[in-house]
Image (cartoon, rainbow, N blue to C red):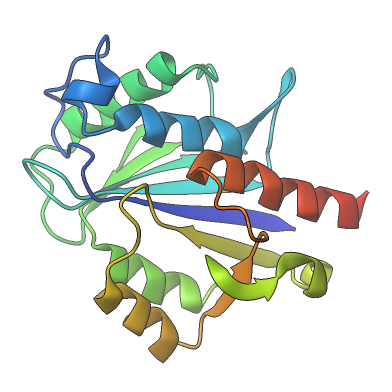
Length: 202
């Protein structure tokens, strides 16, 4: 099963001018973005080859930018926040002059594009089964996830998802899925979603 995660970071910088030593302050909470990537791709002493994570950056000064990490081909990336953020910084440097719709390779397993969250969602609708992680969705334990060959989980950041975006997901009939009554951090939600898939497969 291929697993994808789309993480929307509405305040995260879209230029490389942030300080790696102050990710919470200068990067628009780039620390949270890096944490989500780490949770999506890394397990103890290993890398999830079956996983892709897209981070949709919408902060200053050149939104939008999408940085995508592919577990199958990723090389020389460590799981700590600073290292991951350094790779995002390199991607943003290389993607400074991208035109709308353009995508370029940054390094093995990393790409950057100038594309909106809405465009990415519409693309993925034709490629995989989309689930929107939401507290009012169907409990994840009640959903037969293992019947799908390719799933994609959509997450908001600590600011939540705009109503207009939720309306788009509803229009596209994207199923809401809940992890339970507790509201988790986005990075924790990714770990729990992985666990739910892992226990069904192994």
